[in-house]
Image (cartoon, rainbow over all chains, first blue to last red; front, side, top):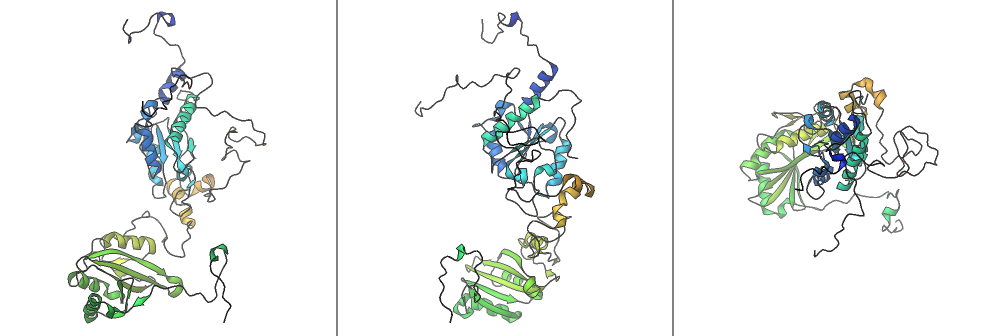
Length: 169
Length: 268
């Protein structure tokens, strides 16, 4: 028997897996987390390293997209300035639901070392954030672990349309 | 005469002040000590009034009147071969004498010399744009306007360059607080959500090292996480760090450390 063929002697002879709608939908959502290309500062370099071959985000089904309309998760990687604040809100609004946000690094979490007039003191002042990654900048391993935690969070959700959209206010 | 005090450990004393301290200055020398510079200075003096001139760190500094800046720079570019304006900006002396000092740093690749043209303007006074002479002055003058509020007449696009167009205040003034004024603190909230959102979103937390262990809304103790809003007692059980549920995940194989191979032979 060729190796790629289905082994009918297993699982009662049928290529069938029984599950619930919630599980199969969340399986799809959590394993094809397309991320918005959103490197704002030096954290963007670590984000790019996570996507490249050494760490390889493709294994998780995380593929960077250049359009918010094709993205599920926004990784805010870097310093968010006040001039840029309206654009991050607009990009977030353009993403289709369900959508998630990872705040990567100290600057996106709290403003970090930029305790100045021009920096937003935490991306969560503008958009609702699901996951905060500490570090300056976080290693790619941290981002990978963060994506796995986000997958875990997604799997805990219900799949239906009744899911309430996240709003800051 | 005062007794000598050793100045070796000045930094150890945070509030050390010397009553008779005079800020050290880079030594100045006369322009006549350099042939090229004295010829340049004569050419400028022939047409414009020069208030002061000296050589510092091998570069000539020339103080001129503010109304002459376009003429002096044109003369230097066309006749004296100072073909590059490498830098220009302003210095805030408002507290001392209510004036701005504006400098133009010029470079001559032909003579291998640098000259700094300086001038004082009153607070609120505009300068003549030199953008027609040097393209590099385009953004520099916009930045000068953005940061100090000094306008340049005859500039083709006199708008802010770094801060947003609707920003208020000039951040590089000595009187501007580093953490921003009232307008800066609420800028993004006011612009995106409106002023009525201020109460909901709340003021900025500027102390980034602040940790409140009893606040489970904003903080979590690593390894002892509890659900958001739980009252902290101090006896939180240890939580296991994991990336997958206990019973495994549908259709996904869990990583098994035992069955994995660690390659520790670099010559493999």
